[in-house]
Image 1 (tube, one colour):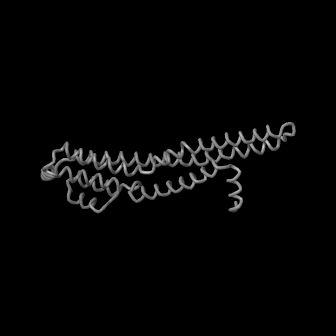
Image 2: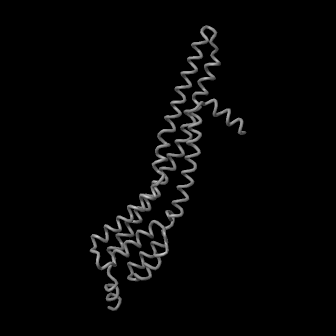
Image 3: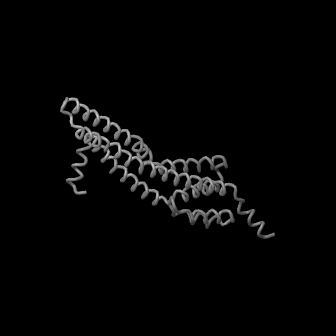
Length: 217
């Protein structure tokens, strides 16, 4: 479709179709930005954190913290916070767990940035399309009434299908937004589960002294 053809198509749908076109651009931008942000946060990589947690559970605590210290992924930051908190002699275990929970909650909140916008677009895009269709139908029937006995059914049919364009366009925007929202939420839920698992294993791991004594027996 050429640029002039696209403009003509948008003009047929009226203001509602222009709004939906703007929402489509915004939706694509948010999806690409969110995927990039999650990729940078290591949402799809967990090998390094898993390796560090295993080292921690095996008593190799210095090696475990060294593995996680330079990493900025979501899982790594929570696991590192749990390791630092659990080795702080001035902090009781309950406070260490609370501090780890605070770090995890903050990171998860940051990872959910932009999801509300996708959710809003998925809700309002079909409604805007429906509104445009209703307004277009009103105009079509008003034109039919004004024509009186000289009414042409083809004019009415043309007005109706042009009005229905906005409903179809609204759904075309809402469906990808809903799919992307569900996908991002699934990814974040997986990250949250991995965070909880890593923190629990870190806090319940035996002390290094216990590993040393077991190894010597």
